[in-house]
Image 1: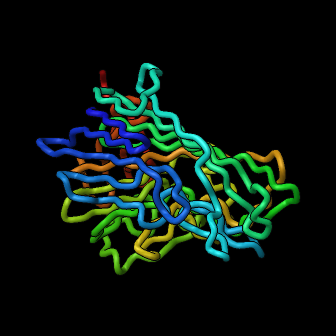
Image 2 (image 1 turned 180 degrees about the vertical axis):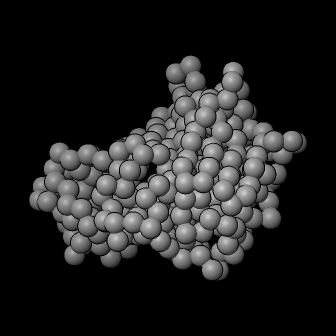
Length: 301
């Protein structure tokens, strides 16, 4: 991959299958100017843009939203980025003006999220590690809660997709087991899809997958059986829901892991079997859904 860092603006260019290319851009964006991947381009066409949340916000009961693209009621920021560090696969830190090659780039971002009801107080420290490799961004998120009094999280969406120009959505293991026009996509519950891990969006340019592992709250233990685990075609976004009506107190911690992958064509695509190539933990993998189960298989080195 080709890597260029100018100040905080990070650009990473890699190859997709065939002669296609992908470019990732990281910068401060959204209403809170949080540092994250702000744009993804395939063959120089924007296919993902953080005009809204891509790493989701929290809705706190009787308080409001914090994090992501959500400001406080008075229009001031609900979150801020405190630190950014960027390293290659050898652990070498990349600095301003860097130009070079890398097999994997890890971006560690530490954010502070405020309590909307008491904006002078912290709600949590959000630590997100983005590992860019090949055609994937692997996201590992940790939230360390520091609120003085217990607070109930009404909703937390975690991993979201801001794909540009999506036309159809597929949710292997969920309600939309066949390609469905995006205007016909809504939502489904945990009980109806207990093994749901991923959704895939299709546009005229490429496919984009958002795969949620079962690490931490990715197993949906903080989502009730009758609550939604997937929400699609909402404010032009699709969501993995990870928390519904759960109380957190000072000292609590939650974690999740997900992989965003962009590809031109899947390896296989039919109602019972869907697979595509991506990257995880710095290695090539095959993401596969067969009948009712999902598998991740490492490619031979």
